Image 1 (tube, chains in turn blue, yellow):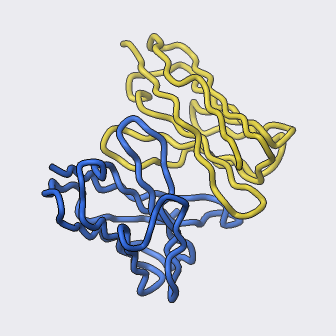
Image 2 (tube, rainbow over the protein chains, first blue to last red):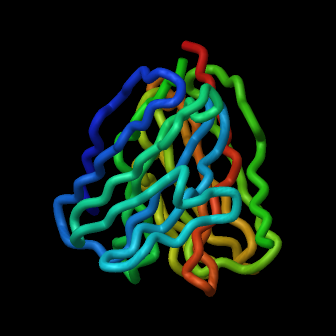
Image 3 (cartoon, chains in turn yellow, purple):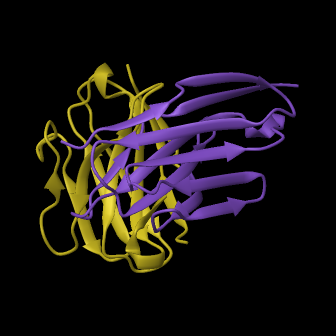
Length: 115
Length: 110
């Protein structure tokens, strides 16, 4: 399995500001994902972070609001832009790996509160 | 699109009891995964299932990949207080897309 770290682990931000979340993996991976998990809810995929090309966004999520970088095979960032209280969530990065590349491993998450 | 239904939504059980939860999908999956999420943490993989009919154990946990490839269950035997958390199922389809269940919140009374 992959070991994944995220920074920051939590933050409290003011409305209208932006926060960049970092995700570091201990091995090279092809597929990295960013999820949002609102309180008491399941995981919602924001986008797939592709190395060397633009991220692929899911319906309801746009690049202007959630720009993503993937400069290499072990690192990605997600920025939550122009934040509002509705953006308060846990943001999780994950990687695809394991046997047959059919498993996902998750980071510890970033708990974001927007005031 | 793909629908993944997980039940029950929540459970309140006594320490020592066995627990069962399941997921069903509207179409077939190639892999079924079960995760546990503790408060303030990311989901941790418990069991991965790769073929129909597969039955896999991890300590007190047992999971099965349904023969129709559209369902899976997770059993926890002799529950203990540290089993408390939210359990998620997930499936991987033919298009290499993952789907997650809505979660089962487990509460264990000592």
